[in-house]
Image (cartoon, rainbow over all chains, first blue to last red; front, side, top):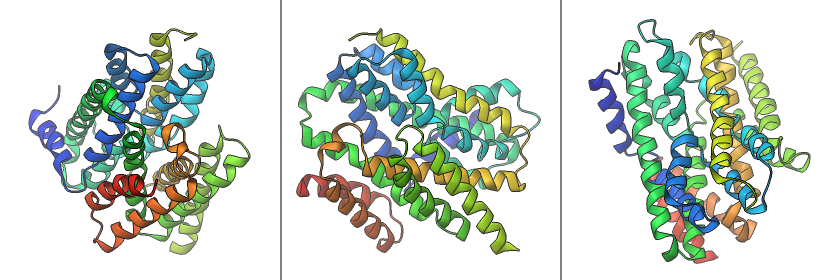
Length: 234
Length: 104
């Protein structure tokens, strides 16, 4: 099962000074309020955040419900915008591998992959013994998911008291927080190029294909950054 | 509303979980010190940056109602504040909401 000591260590790491908790809370309050506005009930709202737990995907679902898109359309649009979770998983889970941990646990624990928990783990994995990293990660994940779910419920209940300006204020917090995180991650040439090229191409490719631009630009920018980084090392 | 909300939620969750699931499958074969791992690290950061740039420049939802120049200025000022405050995350996040309310 889960080692409680490391689980709790992971759980409390959300209190750190650079924690994403504020940004996470603000953005899910906005999602909760949006869910109420478009006609979901409280159970559906909580159910949605609990099961999906990835903000851009939930936003797409909400917009699709408004325009009445088909299920297949929702599925494809969400898959495209959330496909970033694939490279995020592959750049995190090898750090958590240990033969003593059951395989199934990894498949359950991957549900917690979202940028907030991912960042905490990237910053802290070295301080945790390899054998217990997965337990630590589950603690981080449960803490973040709890914040997201309670924020969604809170947003749902206060929706009537939020005016448009407040919604806009809540919506900007998350992009600003993560812009700072990305700037903070620019410690090597490789990372700086990945971040800068990713943002520039992300905008340029939007004119070619709004649906595919994140994947195309992420792949192109990341690959370019990697090879230039390699050249630089050699 | 033309489709069932619960089905939409399930479709969204499934579409999201697929990438996580495939990620775990691939992770089994990727070694921590390998070049592939470093490549995926670059991919993760560049894809996140691309998504962020898209959210800031071409947002969905309420942010779309703010002039793009204002959004850009707010993000820019907050990043500068982040850098001069020795990488403090709290100041820029709190300031962002206030600044946007002020400028909008």
